[in-house]
Length: 252
Image 1: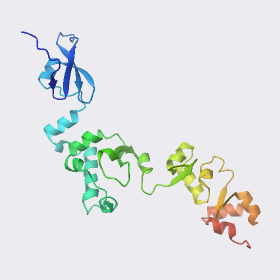
Image 2: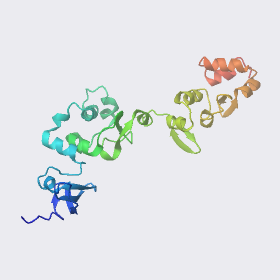
Image 3: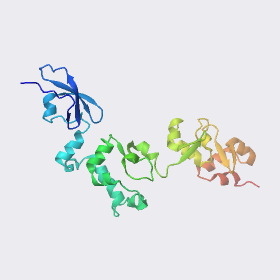
Image 4: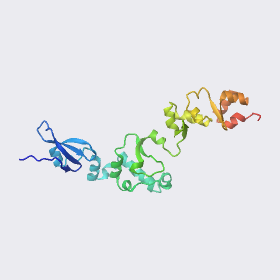
């Protein structure tokens, strides 16, 4: 029987480029290019019988199309899709006011098709959740990604920002960069430190407070106000605001 040349022919998502070396068993194999650009060597019978339809990138999509989305109804990614739709569409959802209630929508492609959602987002990495890059934008392929809990915390609408070197960044990110904890930097800001002081490694040894537009160390404020440094520190630890801390008992 004359051998069939598959070169140049397309089968499902694969286009045959040229014949490859035969397998150890003597069976013909072909070098194919998938629609995603990946090249893969496939046995001839697997191509013509449609046993292999892509390099593997379309496997989830094809399984869903052939077997139905109900087979994934208990998966984590299906739960993400359902919850996303509910908080944007269902007015009885406890989170609706933060999403659909403030105008956050879902593109038709995702709203109408779970398989399209999987195709665009890909597998859900362990410990990750869906995140909108623009917190005020819709759920759509160009505005969503899988993000870890730490990454999501930095994109919330109530994220606190600091400016350092003329660049504005989330407090959590700057704390990581400077080797400090979020709580350390946050507490320093509550006590009146400037952004630069809050991120300084020297801040723990030289406490700073800002009153109005003036920033001084605790030692300098003690000298200027006549209030003992230990008293200033105790007042701060007790939760006193900076203005009261530095003016209580002082004759102006």
